[in-house]
Image 1 (tube, rainbow, N blue to C red):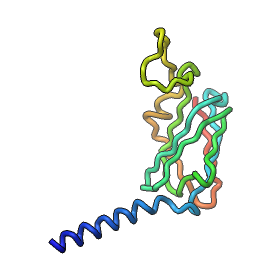
Image 2: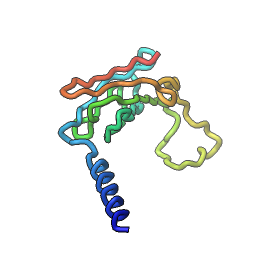
Image 3: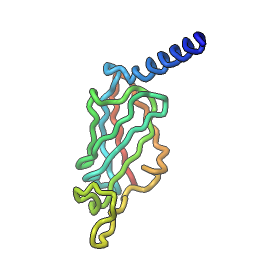
Length: 140
């Protein structure tokens, strides 16, 4: 019984140690770039970086007038990330966070970015120490 308790304690300590290493703040890197759709800057959208190498960091940013930026204090640890980009047609949202459909039969907004750049994205970018970590995207 004692042995089982010791193994459980060691296992918990190792797990907590791994989880508490949520990325050294000194190791985070600023990320920035530009995003265009059919040659025009995306006025309003979202870009997301999902970790692929087991990094404890993953982050997203709002795209405003074709530019996005993740400051170093919220930045990404070095490694590879899957990138997803979203930009609706401006008709969804309207400040209503309700999951219910719009009142009055209004249509929900439509995603303008092709699925190969978001839901089915295979875009991978590598964040490196001492950057620059600038990633620009030109979506046809």
